[in-house]
Length: 377
Length: 180
Image (tube, rainbow over all chains, first blue to last red; front, side, top):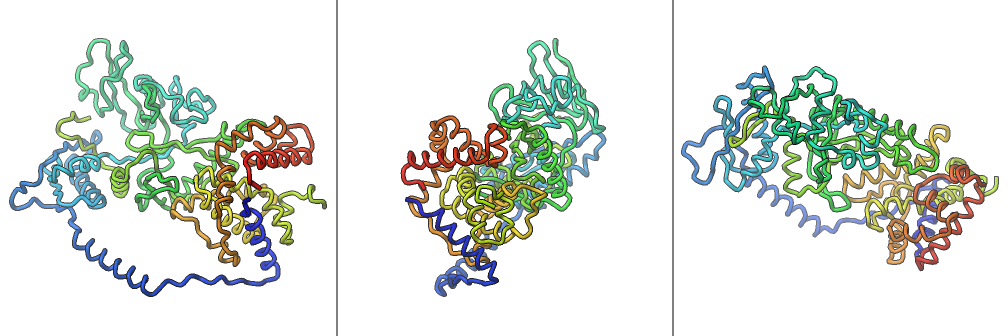
């Protein structure tokens, strides 16, 4: 027979009585054993010595002689229209070096030559280098207010568009349909992107691209559509063909709001990337989640599952929908405390989480780094 | 005021130690289930529950009954403890130590009871209760709704809802075996 509930009650009521009487009860603190303390200190010192000896940060200059154990990975730097390619290349290389260091990749060299960035690294590290050369654009959106419906406008109250309780999985459409919805959205003033769509097959042939010309001549039955700046086509995690969403509007949280990303393991054993928010980020996050709680409560009906009306926010990383958590207005009616930070989970391996943390530690790339075998956007 | 008429807020704001005990009685199973469903670890769920009630006891002087229902306030603390646990990887015992509370060990029977409170198996048992008890238990224990709200929805008295919850939980304990 379980005794836990009455025993905890006894402890609490006794504590309440002591509080009322102004009494204090001191519990003995376990004292660390001297031997264990010495051993722990020795282990810490040893670990530091080993770590310092093992640090081999990526170098900025070319080695005097080609290193036979490394191979080059070349990227073409493609800034936004009107951007300074040379400056973008230098900045991108600096960011890549910082990411390599944060991810603990040893023996890599990053050099800039014109509009190209070249990374000399051991072949075993090439996959990691490619994972670190991504844009790294993080954005957190108000999901219901941002997902576009068939007319290119948000429909916060329509579960067929937002997915309702199953936000991020239900309500998705094909990439072609997401592109069509995105093309109907209002212009937010940022540079537009272009997509090549095949209306007959209802498929996306190419995109996004920052110029029409880069898409080449449209084949028969295909056409180029212009997607207004600030509108994103993101890929959900449902695994079905209809897993795409078009998002418009400004993100509440971006890379600049992130501080101190690192790998964490949740109590459920899931590996995730956790980060703190800057003061401005905290304010924005609290404001976002407060609004979601308010909407969730306003939309609730007596007798109905409270989560049916709960609002969601979407964490988007480089066009991928990382997760779409809900805000339970019953527990956090005033929004979520931004000091708690954010954790991204969802099938991440420890290695992938380490790469992601490294990517988020530096901010987004100022230009796309396109591997040589691919075509530039 | 009689026991039934005392609101959560009145119990929380009362300086009487036993009043806090009665407030605890109303929510301890909901909190254990809440943490169990989110951590899948009875020992952690127990520690987080204890720490949440300790924090509520220490902070009840700052509770404002007009601003928010006591249950919402309690679960906001619980949510904070859970988030803190996810970030630290362990349940803290700061508030319990501050109040001089000894840690209550979680024995095998306790773990079984907590697992039942949070598991789908328990949900299955709930669904097998008579409809009136099932709805009352589901609304109060699983959805954390207060008695007044449920009574209003079911067009009955608060006392009747309490009775249904109580009987439903007694039946569940009987079916689960060894659960208090």
